Image (cartoon, rainbow, N blue to C red; front, side):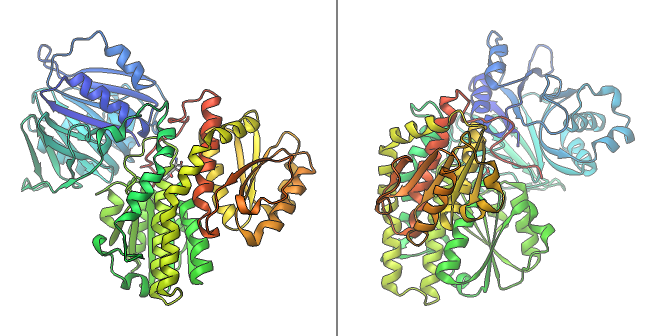
Length: 606
Ligand code: M6R
């Protein structure tokens, strides 16, 4: 969590920092701040406030900041409330710093080094600034080394020293920092989104290495002072991919991008109509040598895992567990050399997932990850990676990451079924052909989005809502329900519809709308009976049903017809429909759809 930017170069520093912070705001939007060098006072000037980057922009607007170097931060509050004082950057003596992560021993450090008097905020980050200042005797590298040897916890620190103008220093442990040197100067950021306006080349700063940026050069050294060559990666994300492209919110834009994103994710991985991961360097033995699978992920990525679980069970009859990454290592998971662990993450930086991967690897498992951000921490920690080609996902609510993750899972399932003799070559090709239809089918749902907008008005005023379905429909609704609650603040619960009458049906009244999904032929009649049960208790029904299953469905239900696919693939059109439902509810309520309260896009604290 928390967005970080640092820039030294020829462009207007204020603009570069503020524009970057706007792009990084999805990492936290409790407060924002920048520090820019000021030659006259030989000290960085700090501008910061609780609130959004737009508030910070207003504060800085009239300031003429003639400088070539500065750092910036958007905060997701952990230690210390949301206030101007707790906003970053923090300045103590000659040190001005921004921080992402948690310094766990900040209290001990404050006491041991008697730092209390120099602190004005309640943050752990300011303690790091004070400690650095304490150790600083004119040599930034030495002070940084000494400081980090005392820190416990996770950190990405980005630092200005007042007597080293034009230079930005950084060091990290766990919390990510990427950097680049390009035509406009040198820059670093907590993530790629902020850099791809300038370049498609970047490198991940290795942990416990000191990075020094100057406008015309970058110097990376390990803790022994040995110079290291940055390992540059390239990314094909374009600037206009990271802009709103005429849409009022990124969430809508990203929902609309899904047909292309799925197409990009699968196209290069199909040869002769069969799944092929050879370009990803993923060997077939990975799928034949395992006797159980364990998926670890959080939030939406975990919901993609639940869909995969249903497919693996029904098609491959294999043992498969899905764990919330945050619970994984505390649940004594059954993991050994024959376990294939699949980690799923859009950002590749979610700390719970990262820690779970490390744990599984220690227990001997092979780890394959499904990731959107190239070179991210989870990708680097994994044995193999299958990248989703979703492009940058900026809205906090995940949409195209989910459907591209699912696309990879469909390919994995097809691959495993083929390799294990469950599918013939023809079966596999037919399964893959259905996957190739997904972009076009999604497009049909998107074309009908006005109908879903009308349905959204039926749930707009609800305080509580249920989403019900069985089997794969239940998995789809878990994600639909998460989407709705995070962007609309409606309390929504997804429930297996057969389980409802074992308790929660007591909550159904005429004020509790029920969203139902019916996409699986074998479950249709049972699901429709369950819907009747809640209808007869007064609930209004919003129904998403596969077109060919709609038949004589009750005309009292508000119904959206989902274009037909094989049952296993109905997740795709249904998910797009449910994302649109959540989106319209939120935007019609006038909420900031892309930045729901209390959330951040990348969760890097446990
Ligand atoms: O970057 P990750 O995919 O690892 O993120 C996992 C979750 O934090 C994320 O999916 C979250 O649940 C989204 N806000 C849901 O829309």
